[in-house]
Length: 342
Ligand code: NAP
Ligand code: GDP
Image (cartoon, rainbow, N blue to C red; front, side, top):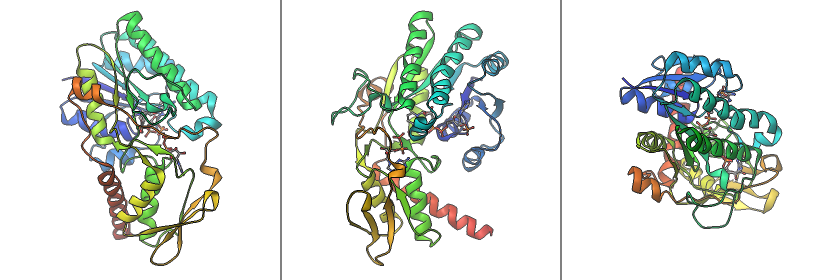
């Protein structure tokens, strides 16, 4: 039986990957900082209690050494991170400690304790910054635009360095945004889908967002974890992009989410005074505020996952409209379940 260690296992990707690996017959160890945060995700996937819990903070080297010595994993997926781009502008040092130095702590521990283990580092499309309309591939230069992305850039290169210097099976998945009903509400997609469902049910009046013109390449997280696993099954370590190759604006996401909830939107005004109105009732359901803008913005992201398709046989299946709809449907179902349980 193969043993996998997943850090950040109660986050979105950790939960989906735990489920995926359990289904494949792995013994799965989930490393988290403790407390109840994120356990709801494992519950929703029906795997609460099936993942062996390990207490681990990437800030604490002793935790990492102890976990590796105890488990001696075959595969390690490092998802633990301060993953919120906007928050990284307010907590740049903490973000660097966890997202950059934390990965070095992990790699050093692997080198000393279990050098034969295969390692996956969660790199990100944010490494590219926004560099025009062309799709990014594994040879495109990086130009990070946030403390989050700068820290992840360090993590990316230290992973490549440990591969080259020590021969570790160390891999980076450069993943474009991937979303799901298990996404944190700090991220724009889940914020919008949760709000659209609440507004539809009369539980909320409106949602306030930031930059409506930012474009992202949004895929379905459940499919991306299979790509991560495939990366670790390759005989040679390498770096791969996972992406859909399509890009949409936040505005398009808002329109699609409200449409999926049965609300047609009409836009009025511009800039910070722009409002999204329920076309039928005339009520304001979307507002824009500076609060959700960033000091530096990545305007456009779109990825080219040809290498993953060719070498891993991986490609995304769920399109944009389908993804938005499945997220809104999940929120509506949650609200109905909550009502029944009241
Ligand atoms: P997520 O839901 O935010 O999960 C991150 C996890 O990291 C949480 O379980 C969090 O635990 C944990 N964590 C935070 N600080 C930690 C620390 N100091 N020590 C140990 N654990 C810590 O993120 P995700 O969407 O699943 O993404 C997984 C990884 O992929 C992240 O590294 C993210 O940056 C990267 N990534 C994500 C995307 C995407 O679109 N989702 C795209 C590219 C890259 P708490 O609950 O205790 O905070
Ligand atoms: P990111 O790509 O990892 O930063 O994922 P997010 O979901 O946090 O943000 C995606 C894009 O949506 C960024 O360009 C944000 O500026 C934009 N955006 C617009 N309004 C909001 C909002 O209210 N919250 C968040 N998180 N992002 C927003």
